[in-house]
Image 1 (cartoon, rainbow, N blue to C red):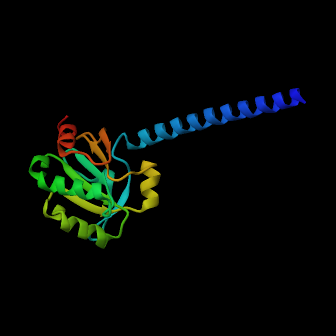
Image 2 (tube, rainbow, N blue to C red; image 1 turned 30 degrees about the vertical axis):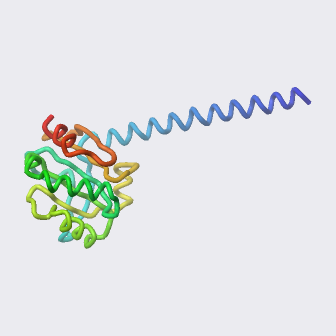
Image 3 (cartoon, one colour; image 1 turned 60 degrees about the vertical axis):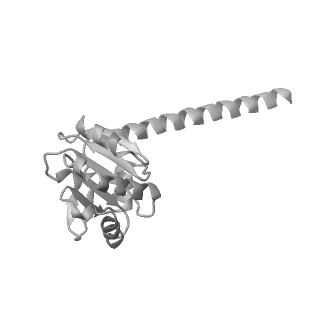
Length: 172
């Protein structure tokens, strides 16, 4: 009886350890795949506020890109938009793209509320949530990606980020 119980306990422990190793390896693989996808401006389709299709990696400009994934109901996203709008003169060296999976009217209202639509270097658009998660895997709001002139990822920020940190990433 004791031998049977010992064998069962050993099998359970080995099974648990195997499952933990497997899930850890899988998470690392997913993280590597995500980094490979976002290491340069990803191929992501979205619609601008006029409903025109745009391909993120085909936007032509000679500036770094600040890509901000947001949700209009997110308090931190609202703070981020307000902070960027207030400091836009310092961010004139960057193209800023705000993307959300919300309806275009909601995105437009968000852009108007925070004065984002008044600036030539800010573009707002709607992306399909399934495509967003297919490219970025997990999304937290706000999620900010800084891409250099060469289209390579310089820095990623998750959550509320001070404009100074964004500026430093844009300038480096």
